[in-house]
Image (cartoon, rainbow, N blue to C red):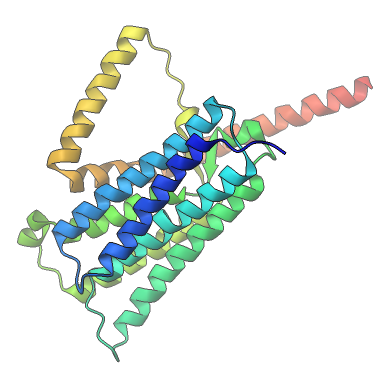
Length: 271
């Protein structure tokens, strides 16, 4: 029996704790304020960072296991599937007897269910094609979908947005419910979304350090002083850029499949 690495699973546990904290914390407030939304967004960003680090450390330590994969998926389902939907519902005044709450809850449920199905599909395909799975994600990853959903919710409650645009609570709820359904569709779609591993830039060591330092400075500045805009630009920018590049990514994938089939056929002929 393969040993289970402790460190990656401890990081996964931390991400799970972040998601549970958000869920338990927002249930203690009748209506979530912008300050609470911002704080909970920081906590979910920590969960997203933990989600990136646990897999990376597991690969470095050669500690990948079925237990870790399943545990990571369950953690993602809670932190990026349940928590964003609950954050959205916590900002709405759900009056009993009205029709709006039904559609708001339905949109949240669709988002969560499709996120879980996205994780199930990912787990099933793990190990089938190790070369292909690192090139791109099939369907929008649930952490990116969660960040996009949260960023729009955060924007609608930001003081600078509220002071400039007058928007009723119901209108905001309808928009966010429609966005949740669209994100749910993207998670289950066959659209190829870019992976960081697919970007190969040849740079010298000094250039790499310089560019990395600049990006870190801008990211930290935005994280501290303007989280709303930073999260909105990064999350939705990733989605729109991936959608624009999807046709090219699909054609490259077909070429790789054709080459693979030709190699297999050549090997069978030699035998």
